[in-house]
Image (cartoon, rainbow, N blue to C red; front, top):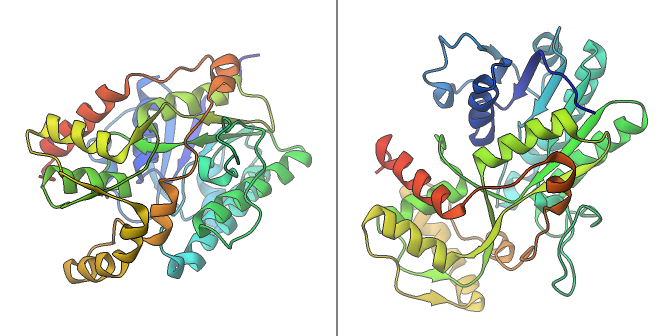
Length: 334
């Protein structure tokens, strides 16, 4: 059965996913309430869009969410904090866990009809022997591994608990997200820029399943329209090694790619040097022990359920890489 949407709220509208989702929903002629905390750069050009209203809201402040959700029928909960450093664990818990609880309670308090919760493939445990990761995989159970993974799993548990108490919610689990309107930019965006600016002397072996942020937005809307209450849907596309990704980025950008890839044991030895180098530059390190482990996990992803139940299919990943590089070039990042 197809659901209807009249007024949609997007939390985290200033983030990579949120900024693209606001644009996509508006392109579908839906009234969108874009929630931002402070930074509005990602919504540049939407101030006078007849389908978009920008409001200030903080997922850690329940009352601001209640105000933002009034008279809305659908909430897309995109707000989240991604980090690959354990020292930011408390902030991840505050936003990804407690923030999600606030969104759920505000949705119930204001009579929102449906919540689309943006989780992550990282919330799901990896398979042991290379079998496809599906929606049946259990959630990450403790915080001894990647702290981010655990906070996203905890956010899902909050949503699923609310579903048991009659909240109509659907969960989407994107893989590694790549695409335009990456204003901050994301960790993958930083990697793309580093390749474009020839600031990566070497690569690390491994890879991940990547998906276009615009495909994720399409999948989220399909989940709102066709998704089954309490179900999760993996939104992924194709596995690409770090080396092959860098070669394609460099080809579009017209630069030479990094020439060598080092094994993980050697990259782990270099983590302290990556950290020091990033600190000197006032940036976040691209390679940490946690991010390196990520490149060895979730190699085999199935998005069949999203195709069958949401009528969703991702596009050409090579075109995504090209569009992303061109977007960074055209928006003053290079």
